[in-house]
Each structure stands twice: as C-alpha cells, then as structure tokens.
Length: 370
Image (tube, rainbow, N blue to C red; front, side):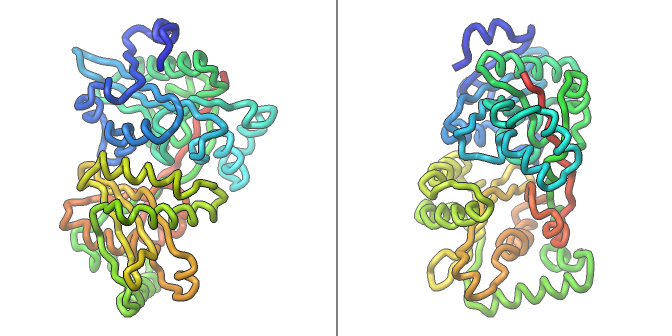
C-alpha cells in the first residue's frame, strides 16, 4: 500500500495508485505503443498477481486525461526474477563487457546487493523496453515529475536505488531527464525485433542476409517436416501448462535462473485469464507429447514472444531445430493472416536473432543510488 506520507510528498499534479484496478485503464493503455504490451493494464494485472512485491503506478494529467505514466515495483534480493534486479544485471553486464557496465559497477564502492537493494524498478518489471509512457503533448516537466515521484516512493519504501534497467537508446527524451537528475548509465543488452514481410515465409526467406542462411533455413524446415513432429500455433490450453512450466524451468536452469515449475504455473494461468485469444502458443508435439513451446502475446499489430521451453533429452536424440521453428518460422507463416507487422523477441542471443532477420536496438540501465 502507498503510505499517506509518500502521497503527501509527491510533486504537484502527480497521481498515484497501488492497484491496476484503481487506474484510469482506457486512458493509461492509450499511452502505450504496439510494442508496449508489458506496460498495458492487462499485463500489469498479471505482474501484480505474481510478482510478490509492492507495485505502484504514477501519472500526470492534462485536461483530466493522463499524458504520462510510470509503473514501478520494489525489487528485493528474494524475488525470483533475477533479470529485473540491478544487483544481478550490472555484474552480468560487466562480465559480458558491455559498454560502461564495469565502470558503473566499480563506482558503487561495494557489494551491489548491499548498495542497491531493495531497488525501485521503474518503467516496468519486464526485460527490455522499460520506459515511461507519454503522449505527444507531454512535456519534459511531466517526465521529470514522474521520475521525482518515483524517487520519493523509493525513499519512503526504504529502497537504496531507483533504476530503469532497459531503457531503449531511442528514448532520448527520458534519457535526458534522467541524465539531468544524476542517473548513471551503462549498456545492458540489445532488444531484437523482426519486421514481418507481407509475402509470408517465402518473402521472409528471400530477405535473409545470405544465400548460405537461406539454404540452411530451408533445410531446417525440411527436417522438421520429415520428422513427424506436429507443429502449430494454438490458443493457450491450461492442460498443457504443467508441461510448459516443466520445459521452461529446464531452459531457465541453463542460465543459472532457479525457478521451479510450480512458480511458473501461476503466470501461465494468469496470462490466459487476462489475454484470452491474444495469448497464443507455438507448440511442437512428438507422439502426442509437447517437446517444445513458445508463447506470444498480441498488442495491436505486434506479437511479443514471452515464454519458451524445450525437451532437451529429445533435442539431444534428434537434433531438430525446434527453437527456430517455433519462435521464427511458424510465427512468420501465421503473422500475415493475423495482421501482425512485427514480432518482438527481446534481449539475448543478438547475433543469432540477427541471422534470422531481426534488427536490434541498444538497451541502457539508468541508475540512481538513494
């Protein structure tokens, strides 16, 4: 709950709520772009019910309508979503030798968990494209007021830092506001997306960057077709969720992220409940058993890849390229008929995603210690 003392300290004109149910829902969502699915009210409801931490929402208005809005979550060292924690992301970025990450980490002067946590994570709790929503008529003063309000909430909640973990390089307006307020910055990754050609899979294949890649992709599809594995794009079915959760947990374990299937199940159920027909899964089945899946969520004319997982024992036996089939080729085939212009893939494996036709933009952490 937002403390009364915190509300009293907010800058003039800043509104606050601690539940999505109390937001001006239609007006908030009107501020989102097609790539902002994780800042829509229906996704924030999913996060609110599964995050296990306090959430707060801030906005400013003009003529009674929101013109700028900011979602926040208070991250602690006990939350399982490691890539939403600055004390995990900064050392990881430094280890990967991302620009300015080592300098920012060294400048903390101590253990990042002790220096930064708890942290008020702002602009969304998702990985990639964290930002402050704003309409064209929003002013730099609107943005600055919301950033200042987030800092107030952080201090009142006992946070040791405020951060935007994945601000896109193209979001220069907010970047300038944060720089003026003393936020330090480093690169935390690259966000990949694929613009889907009108001609479906043949046009996608023809547009790949080299003949060698085009030949290899065509060969991958033939292998899938000849294997007997059934592949299709389906609405989410709760009967599949235990298997999805099992496979995703195995995938996360490969990246040293310890989340059990039992922890993943509520998110799948909440996603289906909140998104209905806008939540789909590309599913591969061998002899009736799920051996791979990838979920996508729709917002306007974008799909955003959300969760994925694979049966690695099956993969080792067969060597089938299920990752590419489910996350790229099936989605490209289905996108045109669904009216989809772009598939958002997020962070990680940038070179691999580029080899499948994606472009990428730089993501930056902006961090203020309190």
